[in-house]
Length: 417
Image 1 (cartoon, rainbow, N blue to C red):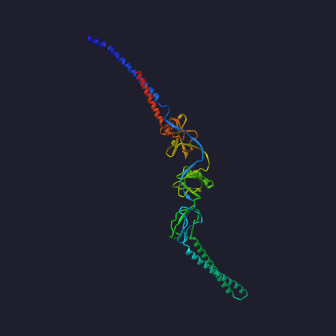
Image 2 (tube, rainbow, N blue to C red):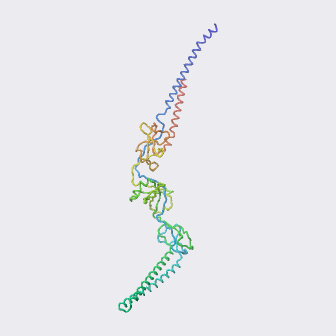
Image 3 (tube, helix red, strand yellow):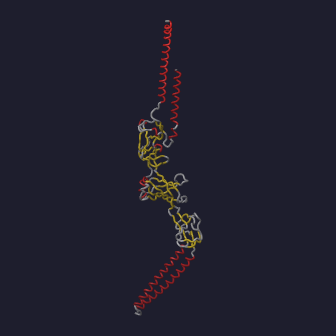
């Protein structure tokens, strides 16, 4: 009985202690739940994922396209001898400027001079015989009028005169040919320009098949390139009507396009295999800096003049199979899928032909986090700025703020406990 009374006496305080422990546990659990809800509320992002957006830029400019091309001489001549013989003189320095008619090579003229002298003598002899036959024919006509000779004799003298006259003209032609061959021993430049080196040196025997050197004109020069079908449709019709587009070129060591000319030639058909068309521009070359064969960057301006165009950053453009599109920041900061038609690049920005209006805001960075119709949190940046650099630190800052908030709540909970 005594033992039972002792146990009954201890049961009251033990039950009270257990009740107090349960209440403390419930209190701590409620505190933790409150702290957790507070942290979630403070750390939850407002709106959609963060992205960078920029307004579409409108500029009035002349639309241009760039191609790769080569410079070509307007006139290019291979110098060949027109008679065979030994080279006795070379009258130019390799790479020098020459004028039309300058003597470049001299071939041994002695055999041709002798032939010209012989032909001249033969022509003189034939002419003398023809003149004598003419006198005899005239005399025979007078004798026939006096009935002193027969008609047959007159006919013979007439025939003899005609034959000797023909021989005299043939001999004169041979003499003219001999003089031409004599002139051909002096090999001259048919055009003005820059001469190459002598391919055959002094003392060699040459004939009409040998190439002695070459001369290219430099006063004006061609820039040839292959344009695409869009370019042909844009400038081809105007060029055929005599309204050539402006063409500018730049060499490999030059900035921009300092040399200006006019589109002179557009081919009459496109290559069906490559979809390209041959084009050629003519440029002045007064200083001789442009040399045939050089690589050239070609900028072709439009024939319609300056007009307003929309410009965007290439970072904003995505590809859906064969279609280009951008995400426009729509009402309520929701992403709107917008197909666009693109043009060439101008001053680092891409021309948009259709699909956008001036002032519309498009996503330029964070495209991987955007879905059509989903909300986004845009940060406005300049269209020509680097959106990646401007937006890199933003997610890290939010993460740090969230960690700080959770830490503060934890401290508050510990104080309450």
